Image (tube, rainbow, N blue to C red; front, side, top):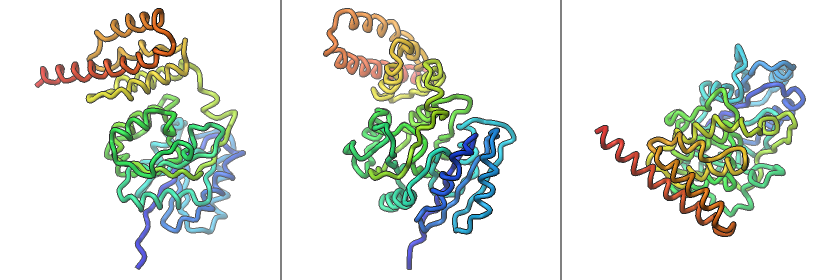
Length: 328
């Protein structure tokens, strides 16, 4: 007797993608996966005919996939649309897909095969066809599976070693619900923040190194329209405020990496103050950083910052421990 396969829920936010939505839909309709598959399109109140195109495509579709459209009464943004999809989904695993992108015909089959190979795995990460190397898993020499919590946390927070996106991940729905892994609404770069939270709880991960997702370089897409320095400020604050004990160097380094990408505009010093219980370390950071920039050669700066990250973590953990012991 054949074992019943998992139910997968694909969640697709829809907003002003009339020219791309047919390709996205067709890629879902072409899935070779033989288990139960539902696809939830979330209409986020765009101004074009995306939804009308979708309704026609769904009406004409005669296959086994359960397509549906959930309509928002007003625009909630990408985070709000994904959250609606999470609440409506009934699958064992969730899969986020952006509506201007597409997936390979064997995408769900390949990722689910890994979820079945490693029962109960929290996340299955796919590989993406893109000009951006960090979205491709094949060259990174990552293991197919890991349940080493420290390694997983380090890998997710490295950013370059792991795709800091919501899409192209098969993620266990019960895991999302248990840990409240919904998207913060009203901000952009929500994927960075979501992955930052993901790193706190992920205990097992599988990685598919063959391409499963086709990323479109959309000139009107959020990744090209919202890369201003100021747009990162809300999520950097959230990251800092949500650092909890035990703190790791990777959490602080993740914030530093984002600041470093906007060097001269975003200073990690501005966000350290939001980490709980660390007011005194701010002055130390400022003094040490000034000393490094004026006296230490470029070749030694990386080593210094690695030492400083570790110092910050020890400080945060000790002050957190002292604060909680006083409360008790």
